[in-house]
Amino acid sequence: MIRPLIAGNWKMNKVPSEAATWLGELKEKLKQIDSSHVDILLCVPATHLTSMVAAQGFLALGGQDLSQHESGAYTGEVSAAMLKDVGASYAIVGHSERREYHKENDGLLNAKVQKALEHNLIPILCVGESETQRDAGKAKEVVIAQLHAGLSGVSFESSSDLVIAYEPIWAIGTGKTATADDAQEMCAAIRGVLKELYLAQAEGIRILYGGSMKPSNAAELLSKADINGGLIGGASLKTDDLLALVEAAK
Ligand code: PEP
Image 1 (cartoon, helix red, strand yellow):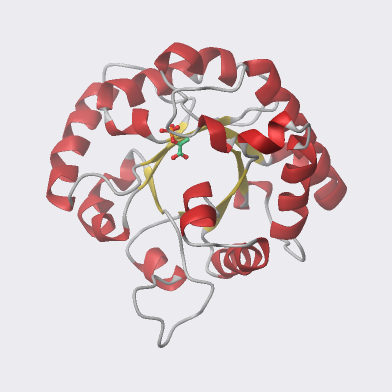
Image 2: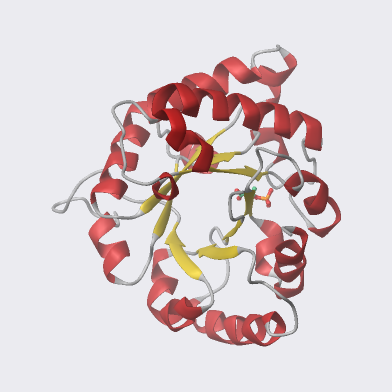
């Protein structure tokens, strides 16, 4: 049984000074439920990490991206070492918003996965098809190709060192969600690729579903065998919604 991971992705929301109050509220509310069965992670803008590090006891922190470079003249970039130094333990790699708006391709994302692992940051590699690709019957082909490219030459010690997030692009921030059966089918295919690449280690790798996960649909999605948690955008901004997702991960 894989311990579920409820991972919030704040995207470019809230300012750092709001985060402390928000965390205080979450901490109080968490005391009222049993969250011992689940890991909670918040992937926040890099500017927020320092002010949120005090929360490390009850949740983990992650970046939303990282540079493929070690250090140097890369204006505006944030390195794996910087994220690690301020207390992050995860980094999202290849979110569809990065792939689309910043033209990040599979080769670059592969370098980012490797860089994260070099610095003991757990990469959350995002994969997912567009609506057109799904309608054309190409969803699995696309996702499997993204996985092979993103994980090319990647190795790690423990199955908890890597997380994959299946995020159908048409479901992100749209209110549309994949049916639990469709999401499970794709996550099972992802597990199949992980087994080819990592043999027995694949059984312990967390596969998250992302795409309009919310309190009303989380329990069904999270009950599926190959869905080991969620990557959650909108619903991770409200403490009550996040709490409901933690409870749904039982
Ligand atoms: C995301 O940002 O990865 C995401 C899944 O967003 P939302 O939950 O808002 O669809």
